[in-house]
Every structure is written in C-alpha cells, then in structure tokens.
Length: 89
Image (cartoon, rainbow, N blue to C red; front, top):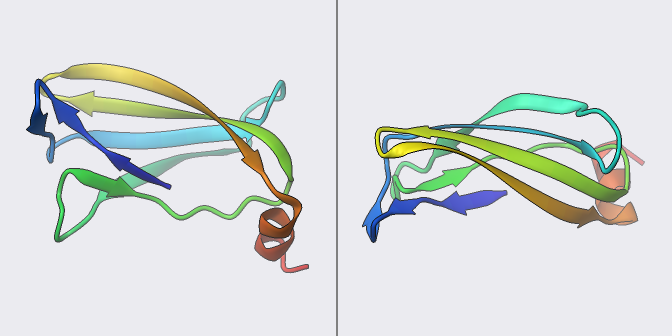
C-alpha cells in the first residue's frame, strides 16, 4: 500500500505512520505496522503486508505529523488470489 502525504499543498516527509487492519466487522488482526517513507520520494509512504483472508478489509492509517494528527480509514476488497498467494496457497 502506498500513501502520499501533503499538508496545505506542501509535501510531508517527517510523519510517523502506522497501519492496523482486519476483515470488516471483526477485530484488527494486522498491526500496528510501521509505514515508512520512500528514500527517493520522502512524502510517499509505503508498506508491504501479507493478508491470509479474502473479502472486505478495513485499514486504519494513523498519521502523526508536526502539522497535526489524523486517522484515515480505508475499506479495500482483498481478492482470493492475493490472500491465497500471501498464505502460500
């Protein structure tokens, strides 16, 4: 997953970002996992995660930056192929 952060039209490269997530309607089973900024593009934050369950997932990105804190919730449909590959199947 990739995030691009900006505040007031300016790139944010000094945020602390974590993500938690789980199947929709169930407790989080992922994280918190640190989302790190990319070396060449410091306002782009990236994380690779393995998911073992397909279906609707809800992820919460917790962003802590000098310009303010924000939690962003994103619902994503995790496909069977992605979940199967992550579990080794």
